[in-house]
Image (cartoon, rainbow, N blue to C red; front, top):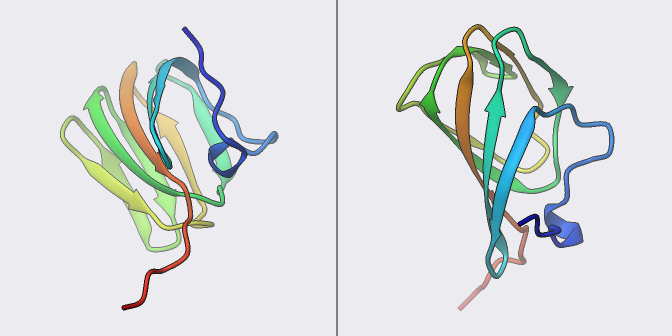
Length: 108
């Protein structure tokens, strides 16, 4: 089953991603499963929402403004909204993404 993301969590139309498996939407967040084959290149991109990425299996290298991250099982990466990143997958890789909608800060 494929569920559309709310506009606030939609991928930019120029984003290059691999095989997106079923998505699980919530209120203001989405859990997405992604499979990237060895040799896949995710070109530099960003998105307007916050994201956590968890590497379940496989590996590669991810580039971001703060440097290079080695992708390996168990690695968790956080991206703030609009943080650019790119990746090269050196093995068949399975990822879990948690995409969070940008919401106004609550002050008390």
